[in-house]
Length: 179
Image (tube, rainbow, N blue to C red; front, side, top):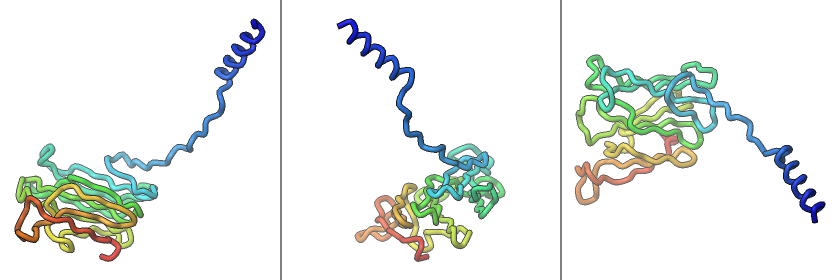
């Protein structure tokens, strides 16, 4: 019996001293560029969101810099204004799963049209920003959803019963690759 207990203790202690090697994932390379923001799903771009306004949140204003993995500026879009009270700040942002588009909803820094959350998107193919509202209508909710490969769903103004409705609205889905 003593031999059995000694053998079990020896095996247990040996397992503690020499644990089984774990399957470690290699560290994910995350370019940071010293900015607050979000990496694209493929890790090749980063959308840096920089505060450029004169006032603190929620009255701040934003600039978005898209940078490649080496830190080189690919595109930039400033929502700042000269006085700091008529620009826009980023409210919600996301990359599409295919890494081809960076989508943002923005709010007015001066409180103008609080119901309207202008939406913009960066196109990796064209290296520029475009206003999504021009295609889908006035966006009335800050949140939106993205899904594969390049689909965005946002809530825009109007219902069947009331086309001017800015409270309920209706969902519009768009493939950004078609724009």
